[in-house]
Image (cartoon, rainbow, N blue to C red):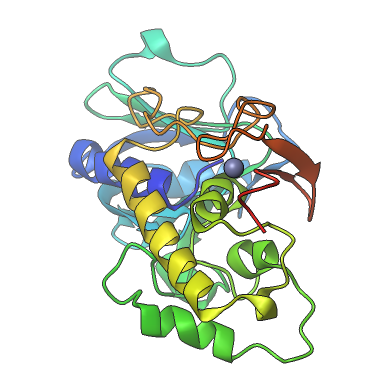
Length: 276
Ligand SMILES: [Zn+2]
């Protein structure tokens, strides 16, 4: 799944490699997929994509917004999209859920694994869209200060029974962070995923803030998680401390085997003695 670090890396590559390319033809995929989300009919995709010029790509939380000049935007990311540039048709995947054939003979394909987005919007639609139009504070930006983070806690109701996992990946949510990076963020902050968010102390808030920054920055520096791919179909080098690969292995801090639980619609991995 693409989360903020992957969106940053892929959008950087897309800006470097695709800007200025003209779309000769575009196709809303060659294989129906129940959970590939589109915003128009296949015919409209073909008609709109033709002759568009690729502009800048930017990370928008876990989404990637690519300007298609003069007046459209392509919205990818936030799910299990594999977004790959091909120098010729020799490396095209058999099945794809979006294909752009550029005039210079190169291609971009999007292949959805699980579920994913390939939305094509007019710029005016994008502005009004609840997720695409909304600009939030990126945890990788300078605006994401401890004061900003702290006020997210201050807005909580005293009666709030929700967990820190919900707080980080759902509401209010840290922009672009999902269940993938959540695991290492909580491990580094030594907080259990089920911990009630209103019970988190000042010291723990500081630890959590530092851990969010450190984990995401490291992930960007390392090209994203090893389970994900960049625009050139290369895996990232960020190896998760906690993942399905490390469950049962001894904790690097205390030696207790890592455990797994299913919680809030996804697996959670944690050290039962370090994380409280
Ligand atoms: Zn431990």
